[in-house]
Length: 343
Image (cartoon, rainbow, N blue to C red; front, top):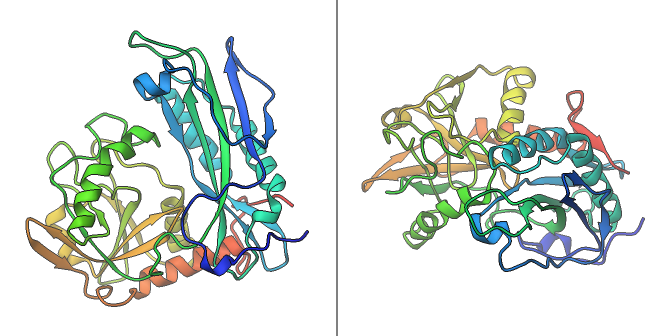
């Protein structure tokens, strides 16, 4: 199969329509059969639930061309499970897990020519999402929904490549205690936009949000989980007293890689902000960037630097990132069930 004639190496992280999207509609208490479509537009009533009360959830994953030419995606079953739970939290009809994985495979196969070639540094980004299409005016869930998947070829999330970035603690919260911080809903990301723009104006790449109840414990950034490396090489993963950290597929995969492949000690616990100076490395992890190393965190004008990762990518974050990327691209054997072969 011949790939599209694109300059794969110069792609940024931006939307480029491909040949097909996937769409399925929920009406009268059930999902229809669904299938691929060449129509990338959405038509809505002005009173649709997504527009009135923000019933929307989404996912993000990638497809890769491996060295042997196979096209694969990474752990779509975990995305299916997370979206199932996210929808239930917003009183939306959860899209069946098996159909989710099948739809992902359909849309990748339909856009196989758009999956960047092995070694290009680019991937096919896959965005499943669901939103309320039914009309509502009183505060209540809609009765009709649409599940869609769009795809787009993308390059690195950060244009400067993998290098340490500086982040800042904002004066705002990302999620409320016992709120929706642990699901992947658009409303959470909307909450992070204003502090993100403020951070960018001040020269920071992102925010480090603290727990919304006490502003004492590290939670996550605007779009990624946060991990730390201790001086003895231990990987420290923050957990939340408020259950307001998103269960990142990438973070959970990195934990397994660290513990079971690289032989690192992994500790999962609440991390106080006042102790982050004890760590030598920090990273923001997610589907888009895998790991973005953090050089420093600034709070109230005081900068805390990570000594092993301030000017260059630290050894722990570098090894974790490369190992996971090698698994995704087929350069290293994957744990059972991690790689979903498409074609």
